[in-house]
Length: 412
Image 1 (cartoon, rainbow, N blue to C red):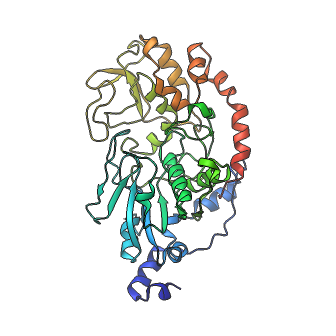
Image 2 (cartoon, rainbow, N blue to C red):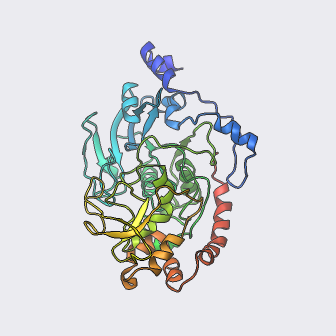
């Protein structure tokens, strides 16, 4: 089939090198099903095959099509010896007619600050036009999609509701549905995909850092999340995208996965990614969560925290990805979590203790906190002095209901 598609020996060899086959007969382990030791050992011995590597599966779907790609620095195809090729470069080498790239928060090369507007432009390497989905519009317009026959969505998520790539996914699917354009989601592992936790977002607190009624940690891959968006009718006017998920091979939700590149500028390593669901709450307070340091989302601190309680100090500096961090140039008292073993749950103790030990309780929370939490209740619970376990009990009913809903959309 590949020879018929490309009629080129060189391309045939390249495709065979990149592709790892299209069989997908591995047993699927549901999130609430604990794998046996035998299953765990068998799964861990097989390397995860990313969807982007399964060229034999998706290249026929791109034949004769004008393609738009939603991607960034994480949109990689694994080669040999831990080397990677960018998806865009690979598709161009295979004569796929890539027309445009659409870039989410942080830009196509992943070097913009969090919340910083990303401008349209051209990719200096490929000269392809790059359309920002984090500037004037977060949803692709009909004009931007003109001439596109199919969209590929390939972004590395980290499994937290407030990580905005899933919001970009929503808007891409919505725009595609409105313009009758099919969407291929190239699936990637969720590095926090082995548990679910946190309060469920309430509709009145919907924002770009929380668009759907899911917990803070949702335990879904990007492909599974796309299926949930479609299945739950979350798109505008209940629209359904023409969606196809290119699945991974040899993956299950209990399997660990080390990301080859930063998914965004302030998540530099596995420790930061695992701590992110807990420490991101500090973004809605007067506490710095490590921006402006080399330990982003691995330390936290503030000039207002009690230095008798917190003996670790650091001073945020201006740096790429954090040009103007909170408490720039000021000594922050706090805690270094860069070496701890991260629990498989949201840890509220750090947030509660910081509130209890700040000298400026009236300014501790800001309006962004409710958007991150997806509810006003969490701030209220902390302010009245509830313990972490008491707060966690209030999440139980919502998490159980979400768990049942989630089961319908699991692919692995």
